[in-house]
Image (tube, rainbow, N blue to C red; front, side, top):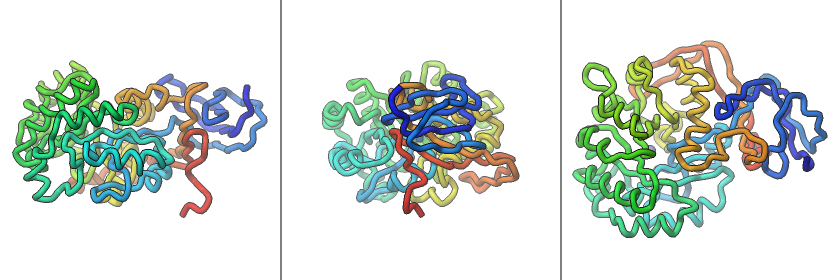
Length: 381
Ligand SMILES: [Zn+2]
């Protein structure tokens, strides 16, 4: 075995992908996991005492808006990810074909955490989002050929196509935009991720355009493009979409997660495939805060620890085609989070000002990315 750089000792390893749970040590060498086992008798350059902590795969947030220097909604990935145990995140369409080359050079080349962008079907990305200008002109920035070319030139970075599928955000362009995203997705063989919230267009017309591997985000939105019908039942079109392999992502956001929707869905065994934050500047203080807080909400809604963690580790990894991430395996990348699971009485607010009180609170204690401790760091405040 190569020299061990870091030994994580005495924690409770939980790896949902391999159904591993137990008191195990994890050895890290040259950015990779060198060994996982009980009481590893290894001499290591440095050692972390993980007693009382959960040792889990680095968390993966499938829906965020991360970057910098871009006049849009983004947060700095290196500010928000390491303190949250997040070692990889999808930027959901902050850039489009006009802005992606800049993003690749300025952002992707220098972050501590791994970023996997979905490109917006509008070439302008999310610049000027939430302005009347954006609503009126979204569709004018859709150029299928240009977007296909940008993806083909950047296959190693771009993992999908993001589209806003609500007239509220993109005026009359929503369905045309989803069709264009579908066309690009088919040409390049990447998933389409659709944002839903308010009518129109009807959810059915959007779902009709989604295929296996595509993603519907904001699954538990309280708005009327939601997954429940008027009687609170999961819409047949939603069940059919899941049946044919469409994935349902949480995408908490500022207005897209309501406990009353979540409870109805969970009662009908409709769990989200991935639990993500949709983190951007307007929701980071309230109601989202971070991914461990979003995961805590699901623990308090009744999901098990394994069910919850799978939705922020191996499940999102699979959706972006990164099967060595989101798992703890010997030889794999040493992206690891140490979490504490506190028991007490904790309150959490959703997007419609409802409060959930429950016994669980997950918090990040340490984050390791590519074998290096990125939280806490020297000088971190
Ligand atoms: Zn978003």
